[in-house]
Image (cartoon, rainbow, N blue to C red; front, side, top):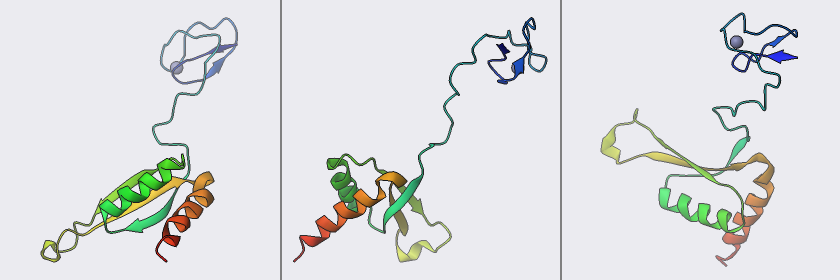
Length: 112
Ligand SMILES: [Zn+2]
């Protein structure tokens, strides 16, 4: 089989160039190119207004080998006179959510 490496269109044997883009066809299109977006479904495990707190949580989760990403969202629609308002979301892959919640509960338990 012949494939266009750019359009990933399949052509019948004997065709040498892609009809759409003119690329020379290849026998094997190879693996799908990596998507721009992250294929992992990230879910928010903690939302806080304090980026320092978010970094601490990140540290706890990373210690437990749970992947973490932090989304910081500044709200520019609110007047700046109330100070710098932002929401920081700590996200983990959906598959690690249970472990992340358990890890954070463990941390909270230290308060007593
Ligand atoms: Zn093509």
